[in-house]
Image (cartoon, rainbow, N blue to C red; front, side, top):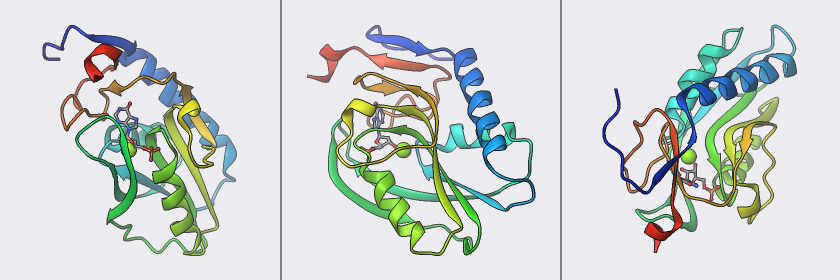
Length: 182
Ligand code: IMP
Ligand code: MG
């Protein structure tokens, strides 16, 4: 089921294409971590919750899950540049691998901030899985190890991604055509 979407939305990745990307990322993750090592998959709320739930179920091993909530976006489409932690993880990550799960990396501010914080907690490693990477928008260094696709500088919605808290539940990912952002 899906609801009627605005006319200025264009499909960027269909449900099927997203599924393929998730499987590919999961495969890379499975190959990257030695068997038997503990991994804590930390989803960055809210946007990553759907990707996180699909990704952890596509892995061929058991993992622990946790969540963080950080805010760097207001209700518009531009980042405020300020990162606040609204919810921290509850897991003791000392000596464990942490895999941060993000739906999209934009300026890189959110993830580089979170990554630094987690590094200080003596995690064995902190890596990043991002479904989408808006590489050309980067303002601070942030290189996700596991990426679904590099996307151009367009605002996207669906599959967890919102626009002013709307459209998160769409199953495909849509590009919002530029003109509506002005
Ligand atoms: P960053 O800190 O600038 O990298 O921002 C990352 C966060 O901004 C993502 O996790 C999203 O929540 C949000 N974001 C970035 N680009 C988009 C977009 O195109 N659509 C919806 N949310 C976005
Ligand atoms: Mg996010």
